[in-house]
Each structure stands twice: as structure tokens, then as C-alpha cells.
Length: 396
Image (cartoon, rainbow, N blue to C red; front, top):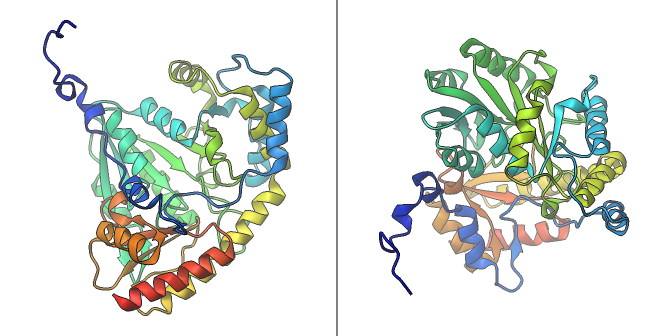
């Protein structure tokens, strides 16, 4: 075989944006423990319920009907209409299907949103701890994620708007706001969202809003406060969304992006040059989720509410952790007294407690000492988790 010109130094020959894409600190722990018998896996953001039958049947019918061809890049009309009707019912406003674009996952929605507003030399500001894929998507686009650590007191996180404002520079193109937040459960009030929107308006920048966990709130309300409650038609807000959480469809890889309708052709182009659209049978499943899925969403929320109680009470009983029960999402973020290296602690708890948790080091500044536990699981698993953690932490 002829040797290649330039030799085989492959890493130095690729783009730095690709080379510097970070390894997942969560996956590192998952790989450490994925083969352990009897391990309770609470390290990733999904529940333990499989996709319900009515969603699966819609996909099966689509396949049986031969819907295996290319389709609308923006999404089949029936799904876009269903998403619009879902929003109309949830937010009490009229929504046009022209605002919604079906994507091959919430992650693709994030990537498209970033591509729409930022590129090399630009900055996006993110309150942290935050889902690490935000910063990674920004970096891959050649831009820079500017992390602003949230304030932490007695296990509860809060957003300092003055610190956030101080991080905005002439290079800033967007604020990335996740509420309810992964991993902390922080949930913005309507007043905080208004203040964030005012800040974006003042600087002429976008907001990329991740409200994926908006249905998982624990104050008796139907949903969390949303930028939809405070924005005007001219405001620069992009909403990233997914079917993964509400409808137990993490493996289906389908989401949507909400954006001003005038961006439609641009977004269609970006979809065309990445995935060329989502499979029709998956879109039929997603349509069924939208149209028939409210009872299942209610079941998910009820299970998470009970899971939140079990975990918060059980961890507090150890007298060795700092935490506050989250206002939203389905994660408990907590730190263990006297333990500052959450990566080492997460691996240790895999080995000693047979429980898989995500290390706070994966979520950026402000999260280094914490652990994230997903409580969207059946009560018996969570009760056993508490018992194992109480024993392991008691022996530490």
C-alpha cells in the first residue's frame, strides 16, 4: 500500500473544533458501571417506562402502509399541526404550524439553533451547572460558551442577573436558558424570564430556550413559566424541544424547533444538509404522542412527584448531604459533605453502592462537587437506591 502524503498524524490533520469536542463525563461513569449486575442506573436523563403502545402502534401502521420514503423536510403537516395545537392548549395562545420544524432529536434542535445565530468568534452565555451538550454544540460550531455559575445556598441554586449581564460582550450572540433546568431543577419565575428577555432585547441578542422539562413541575401547576408568557412576536427566541421526556421516546430521536416562521427556509435548508428529514413512521408515532398522550404525561409526572419525595427525604436522612428538592425537571442534584471530587465519588458509588449517578464535573462551573440523580423511575427502585446510598455514605 502506498503511504499517504503527509503521513498518518490524523488528529492534527482534522479541524480543531472536531478534535476538541469533549468526552462526556457522564458516559465515562456509565462505561465504568454498565456491565455491573443489579446496578440501578440513574445517571442519564430518561425514565424506566418504555414507549407506550399507542405510540408504537402508530409507527407500526405507518411502516405497514409503506411510508418509508423521503418526506417533508420541515415535518409532515399532520405532526406540525398537532404540535401547534399542543402549544395552543398548553399556553392559551394561538400558534401556527409555520413556527414548528421537526428535527431528528432535541440535540439536533440545539445544533440548528446554535448554527442559526453563532459561528467562529461568537459567544453564547450559559448559566451553569448545565447540560453539557449545550457547550459542546457551541464549541463544535466554532463559537465559545461563556459559563456563568449560578449562586448556591443550602443546596438551592439561584440566578444572579447582574453576573449574567456582566458576561455579555460585543461578541455575545445569545443567552442559553434551560428552565426547568438539567441538572439542578432550578425553575425560572415569570419575573426572571421577563428580566432575561429585557436583557436580550437591550443587547439585541437571541435567547435559545430549552423548556423541555416544562411539564415536570411540583407546585400544583400544569406547567412551568415560559418565555411564551412574556415575549412579543418580534422577540428573538428559539425554542428547542424533544419528544424524549414527556412521552418516553428517548430512543426514537425526534424533536422540534420553534422559531419565527420567516426563518423557515433557512431551517429547512439546515435540516436538508444534515439529516434530510425525520422518518415518516417516527413522525406518525410523534403525532400519536401529541394527540393521545396527555394521560401518559400525567402518569409520568405523578411518578416523578413520588420519586422526588422518596429521594429528597431519603438523602436528607443521611445527614451527610446538601440538597434542596428541585422545583422542576426530574433530577436531584446534591453534594456529599466532605467530598469535593464528584467524578471520583460517582465511580466509587458504582463500586460500593451499585448505583449509577452522573458526576457534577460534567455540568460545568458551579457543579463540580455535586451528583445528579434521575428520579423518573418506579418507587421500588428509588427506595432501594436510598437504602444503598444511606449504607454507602454511612460507611464512608
